[in-house]
Length: 208
Image (tube, rainbow, N blue to C red; front, side):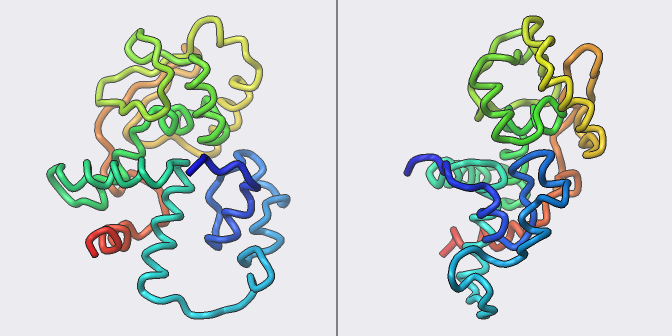
């Protein structure tokens, strides 16, 4: 299946909450959820009670859409999480948070994960002084993510860093805005991942 290229606001409306897929727009009155908080389509306003499977599926789709990963990628992350020590659901979210495109977004270099993925693919960032252009690259504690010297004059990135201050910085990261770099201090715990999801429903879905 190809990557989704349709309207992003439609995805937020389908899940019934903000997924922050369009960056700064999501914090304004133009956000689709603020105007039409119901699913898209002809029967979007029907209030049918979902089944247990439906709830599990929606939770999985929500997380996939937040991080912008495909089904095959997502299943691979789940299998990795199962093999790790600890709680599978928390491990899954931790792996997704440690993707380089998500780290770039969390540090504030981009206004959305989609924009961050594009920046990484175009080779704007280094990890421990090595060029990395793979959005799915998994960062580790101690890794330093730095914007390349030639990319520091890009106005869009400067604006994103300023606007990102209202989002706050995760406690498992440090950032040097003047030096255009950030550091991963430790692995994020579930409490340090601010996502309104019930990851146990995803575990139940894949355990069937």
